[in-house]
Length: 73
Image (cartoon, rainbow, N blue to C red; front, side, top):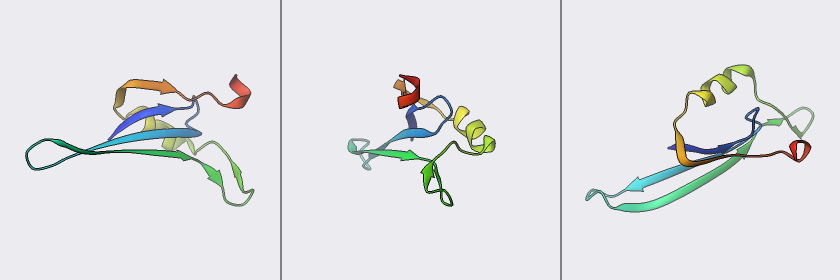
């Protein structure tokens, strides 16, 4: 698993999973896109600081790109 993209505050993110068979041949590539949501307000939001710290420590893919939010464009 590698972090393939994230917004500056980790509000939005994208992971890439590579699955290999017993022979070491790539069998599948799975991309997971996500965002943090406030379940009370029912709106997208920033994650708690402890998750921002965890994301900072993840390995990033060689084609990692920052995800720009509409307010940052």
